[in-house]
Image (cartoon, rainbow, N blue to C red; front, side):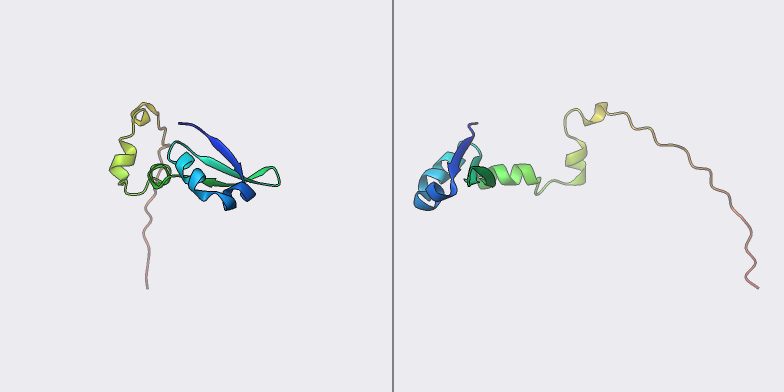
Length: 84
C-alpha cells in the first residue's frame, strides 16, 4: 500500500490521477499545505468502516480471544415491597 499526497488545486485539475493513486492506497488532499481530506477506494473505506460485520464476526477477530476481561461481581439485594 502506498500513501500519496496531492494539493487541492492539483486534485481539482486532475482527479483521474488521484483516483488511480487511491486504488493503491490512501491519498491525502492538502489545503494550504495541511491535510484536509483523504481519498480512499470504496473497498478500503468499507474495510475501515467495518460495514457488514456482525457482532459475532467482530468478536471472532484474531487476537480478541487473548484479551482478559475482568467483570466485577455485583451483589443484588432483594427487598419486599408493600404496594398497599
